[in-house]
Length: 65
Image 1 (cartoon, one colour):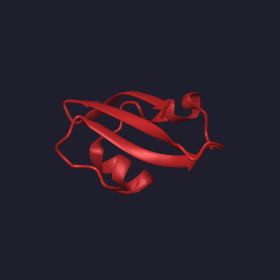
Image 2: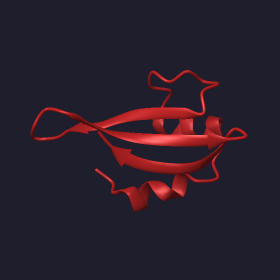
Image 3: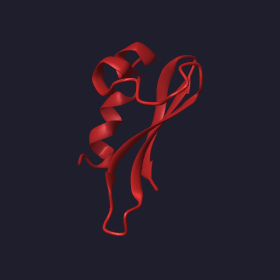
Image 4: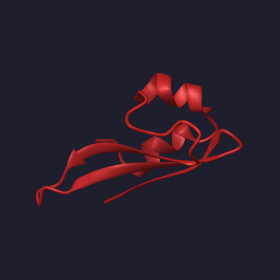
């Protein structure tokens, strides 16, 4: 799994570029927040990648549960 800094290269990309790189997953296309399941931790909880859009461009990414 990449760490958060490795996902910072997504900042500035468009929704179309994100879909090409990560797939569409189960995200609602017009939403300003997309999530991707990265892996399950040892407790069985999903570790998620959160992608925030502003004007159809990624403005912030972070990883959480």
